Image (cartoon, rainbow, N blue to C red):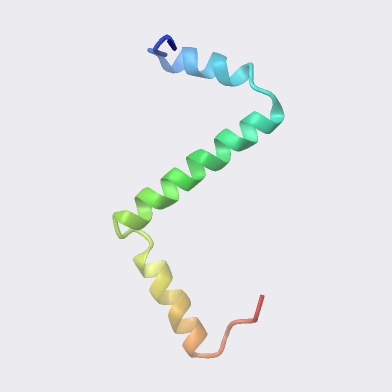
Length: 63
């Protein structure tokens, strides 16, 4: 069973022990979690609207 990490300091120490690839994976997970939360809370709605207006106006380039 995993011991609970109780403090930010303990979490920081655990992160310091991770390899570069694991830190990148953690960073990506945190980013994805934040984006999902912001999308669910409507914080990205204005950006989506702006992007759609740009597409309709023909001011975008294909990827």
